[in-house]
Image 1: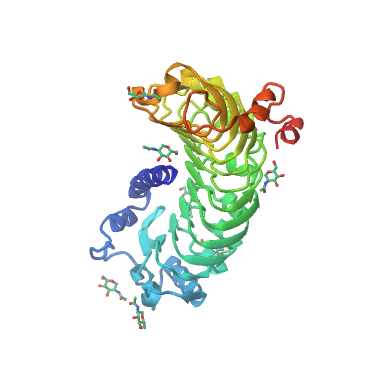
Image 2: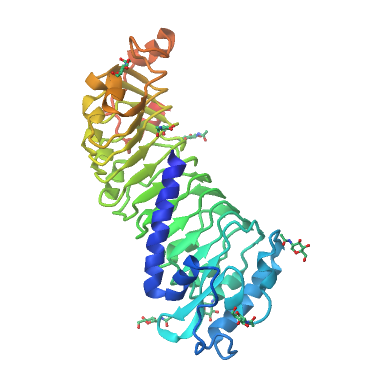
Length: 391
Ligand SMILES: *[C@@H]1O[C@H](CO)[C@@H](O)[C@H](O)[C@H]1NC(C)=O
Ligand SMILES: *[C@@H]1O[C@H](CO)[C@@H](O)[C@H](O)[C@H]1NC(C)=O
Ligand SMILES: *[C@@H]1O[C@H](CO)[C@@H](O)[C@H](O)[C@H]1NC(C)=O
Ligand SMILES: *[C@@H]1O[C@H](CO)[C@@H](O)[C@H](O)[C@H]1NC(C)=O
Ligand SMILES: *[C@@H]1O[C@H](CO)[C@@H](O)[C@H](O)[C@H]1NC(C)=O
Ligand SMILES: *[C@@H]1O[C@H](CO)[C@@H](O)[C@H](O)[C@H]1NC(C)=O
Ligand SMILES: *[C@@H]1O[C@H](CO)[C@@H](O)[C@H](O)[C@H]1NC(C)=O
């Protein structure tokens, strides 16, 4: 479910991007949509002219890149020969925004090329790039610092590669970046707090080895989709999550080693359509504020250690379509929470401590948890004792 949602957001964002590019770099968009049609360049562009220094630099950059490509099973780069870089497979040229008479390399799209190699420093010469898509290749190593030169870079998709090292802080200096997809790599260590102070539309960093939770000094952010799933963030979700309120529509924190209670501030994220905090170590009750999330369609609290009752207000949410709270220690379902199918809501309440429901935990499993209820008010996140007490 989560991955479908992610894909649909990506598609939506990509459509948005195409629109954006239609304004700034009109030719890329055209080429994306009709990639098999003939060249979109106008003959008067000086693309083949050696006097265009931007394309000369691009030539140097792409040849340097080709030298550090060690495997290219589909021969994607075999036509990366000669000075006509705009004709190279996967390379998209567009008029330079400040001077539409000059062609420049504005996009790289090598999605699913299965290429092995790394990114050389010379990529910094492609200073007019607005889009880089390298999804599903075998690029490895670290990102070159020279990427800081890419001041027009709007969308960067490096997902499903083998990049390593700390979170690439060079990306934090890119002024135009809006869409960042680093999922399925091997980035490790802490997330830079600046990540959340950037004006990004979407951040996908799931399936890496990143650690440290969302910083508690979070400024207001603009991202509408944030996917942290399958990292090792650890710690609790800080009340500062409320700073995502004006934009956040999907928050996916699956299997990120979250502990402590869900803060009531989650209920401030009034635009949320998807909240998935499953497979963590969350304790305590469902914050009642979630009953205020009128747009919420998908709520997954499954595989945690939460307890208390499942509140009616949440089950009555007008747009709720799927509510999973299996594998917790809930002991009561208020009102229609006990039979959500009556409301047409897909739900899963297995493996809790619900009396009179099938497929529940044993008394032996339930009693120790129910005898020691967690008081979330006593240990809000940010309180140093919270983690010691709950992990
Ligand atoms: C790629 O090129 C090599 C050498 O020219 C050729 O043997 C191979 O079949 C080509 N592969 C594809 C997928 O076209
Ligand atoms: C580049 O592509 C165009 C259109 O396909 C073609 O006419 C032109 O000869 C190509 N240029 C080179 C140098 O291959
Ligand atoms: C493009 O033009 C804008 C405003 O006219 C200017 O601020 C910017 O520096 C220019 N960019 C480049 C790369 O020349
Ligand atoms: C950055 O781009 C400019 C051209 O816009 C180029 O002259 C310079 O060498 C590039 N710097 C790096 C580090 O690649
Ligand atoms: C989960 O996070 C805690 C910090 O809250 C840390 O001590 C622990 O090592 C993490 N668990 C794993 C499996 O890495
Ligand atoms: C409901 O959500 C759960 C957890 O995300 C998912 O496994 C399940 O496939 C969803 N069911 C439907 C019908 O969407
Ligand atoms: C829930 O309601 C449906 C439809 O009325 C009914 O078929 C089902 O047996 C009920 N389930 C429980 C657990 O009461």
